Image (cartoon, rainbow, N blue to C red; front, side, top):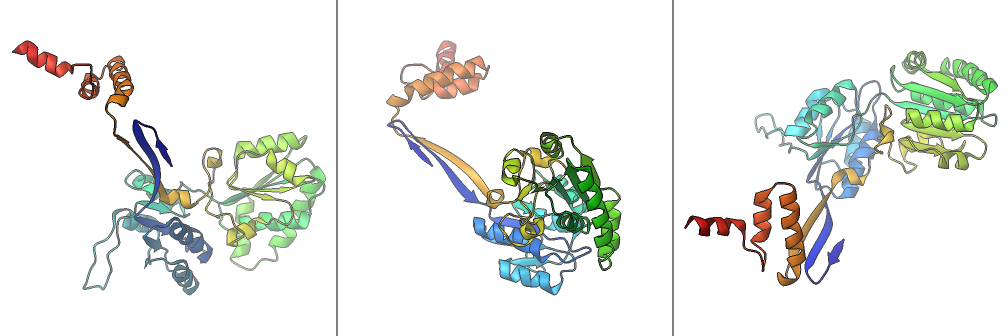
Length: 342
């Protein structure tokens, strides 16, 4: 964006990060979708070099890295992977290891060790967010399909034993029917999905609200990673919700479709951080740069005089004198001091 006057030229410009680091978890399940969500986004932003780190990458993970356009894959996970991407690695000819550049920004979900490491390197390089356990909150009323609600809650619960599935409803009967359906469906899962989901469901919960206003207020307070609206007039309810990572409106807008390519990125804020931040996007790989140029010294004098006054109000005499040095009418204080000493 350019803003030009007869006195000053000013501009805001967007520049991409030179090197981006992307983390894809590889614990209970291979997650090629996380490779696509992070690496493709970095490439779309225009990053010249993209590093992917994933522990014990499965063939499908490596295939996703190739399709997405990663320049190098680090077969390491946890805090070690974050350290490698943050500080870089020198090439080692003896081991046939390529150089890994220090990344300007590191993105992607991970376990508590990954999150802790990202918190430590934050500041040395940029990060997208400090992601916690995955979570879904479903707002459902009497019109909701309990089988679908249950399936969506289980889909989130199978992620991890610390994942949370939350149901918020105005209808006690709906909650009871969903609970029964969850018990029926979860027993049909294969292992290790079944045991993982069952453990996660022990710390999941439902909330009965007196009306839809209270449902929305509760959702906004929790600011879930994934928010599903399965109600009558779902769009109207969704429009009133303010805090979430990703929003899925209506019965057909399954959160799992967002996980795999419906459009929204699945790298989303968790643990209530949706109150002040959003999901991964190209903006995480872009920097706003500003510059200005003054061509007409005479017409810039109002700015010079304002700067002198403001600097002295703040007690920054050096600032004031630097502005005075560009004045056509004011004698810089440092010249007065020199003349006085002579």
